[in-house]
Amino acid sequence: MRSDANIAGPMADPVPGPRSAETAGGPVSGPPGFGGDVSRETLPPMDDTPIGRAAQLAVEALGRAGAGLPRPPQTRVMVVANQKGGVGKTTTTVNLAASLALHGGRVLVIDLDPQGNASTALGIDHHSEVPSIYDVLVESKPLSDVVQPVADVEGLFCAPATIDLAGAEIELVSLVARESRLQKAIESYEQPLDYILIDCPPSLGLLTVNALVAGAEVVIPIQCEYYALEGLGQLLKNVDLVRAHLNPRLHVSTILLTMYDGRTRLASQVAEEVRTHFGKEVLRTSIPRSVRISEAPSYGQTVLTYDPGSSGALSYLEAAREMALRGLPGGVSVEYDPNGAYAPQGEHSEHNPHSMSEGIQ
Image (cartoon, rainbow, N blue to C red; front, side):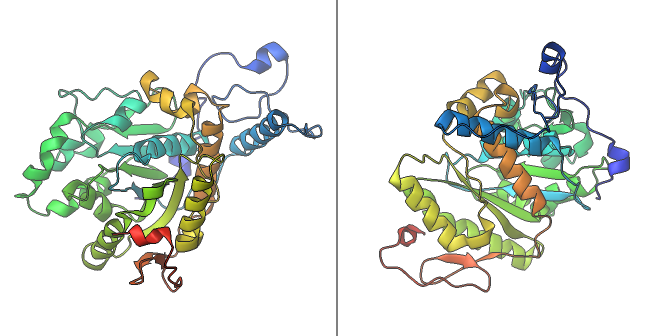
């Protein structure tokens, strides 16, 4: 599957309605749907206050988003996984997807979690009668039959999950080629896409294995708290196993720090620990704790459309931009270090007996 800019066409305005330019009389150069009046003229000197600095950074981020991004030459299939719950997998999936779509891409979110939280956040119905990813995996229905467009964001689509998916782990056991059913469904999907983001359940069962076989890149959200690295080793070992036996293209391409609270030393220590052990795979942008990010799903929206000027929305815009500009990594992976740390392949970190990474299982 290849991305085709000519077929995909330009991205339309995802949020219809008046813009501030209509009332203020100025040009709009921010990203579609942001309604802000971002001038391309020279900005005035930044006010040396926290509010002034935040406003300046917001204007700069919106201006960069409005410039758009080059589309990848080939569809990037990205698996958002971490078997630890509550680290922001679903939040990261839907907001990165919305950010990439607002940057001008065509993006598909595949909700592989039986809870269906990604479907909820994107405003997609996912009750038991709705055709879902369960029908694709178990009943071999074409992926195109279950994909729905997201109303609020042009160029964003979702393959929803229903509660039926909870039984798919058992039903897949007896099926032929059970590990590669999602891969075959994606390969037969004919619509042009730039990105596919797969939201995995908080487990390492057959659903997650299907995602790892279908994808080429693994995105790992890591919460900035003490237990962030605990249990992560098993996920990385599974990535190595899938790469060795089922999908040689698979590699950890992106690690994103979530729920970062700059007021605490603990968050800074965890961030430093993660950057030490994972190096260049860690995005420079981290996602702050934000009430707006938590509120958005209750309205069936991503934070990008719920409160586009919030710190959470701007952070996800910047993270998506950074991730997109990295392009297709050249097979960089993260491998196991028997001393208790994980480092990019070809690099080794010395063991620190007082390191938090001792908790990695």
